[in-house]
Length: 279
Image 1 (cartoon, rainbow, N blue to C red):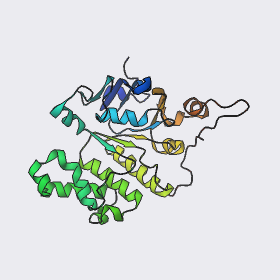
Image 2: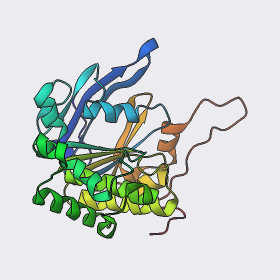
Image 3: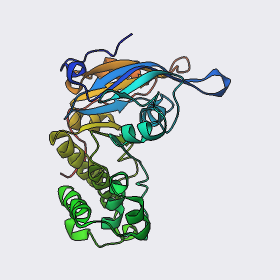
Image 4: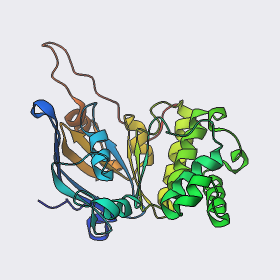
């Protein structure tokens, strides 16, 4: 089964294509069960789903951090699932992963943290001696400028707010020059104003031509910021459509749980705009 073609025709011009991806853990639990989709350059796609739906496993398999049991992840024609050694390293350079907890070196400056995105592009001796070439240093500063943090370039990471740290992580992904940015719950630990700033930044990155795929728990943020939504439930894609088509019926299909007799299962509210956000 091939990856479904979304309404915007992204399959034909995909920068990343996931096809029949499968992953099963102990006790026969299927974390991913034939997941297929594609993402085009410049798309901002939100991945929704309840806890345990397979969102984090999907991102880990897409980057090769977790080996899938079957299927493929093609990034510019290179299959991450079947690549090894130098070929896997080259394929991973096309895919940057942003974590919920930022994964910055807290005692280093924002500038030094962004330089980590250049590691695959510089000789090992420069990395060991922390002697990055001028073009790499300038590139790191340009990436900080792109996320609105140039003035904090020489500030230690542990002196930045949570939202600023996440934007440093985005700048690091930009420095990597990846074709695809995967953001795993990038705003889960942030206040509403910081969350809006981070998602604004990711949307700007997508508009620059980079494919952005972000897993989110907040449905109203997904609708407000993403162009397209992919919904997972029990390791399967249950919806892949433009964000504007998301309605209460679809949300019930994604989130509804079996409720005790006489009760109504809770489900997130769908709104077309952010709620209580300062932009």
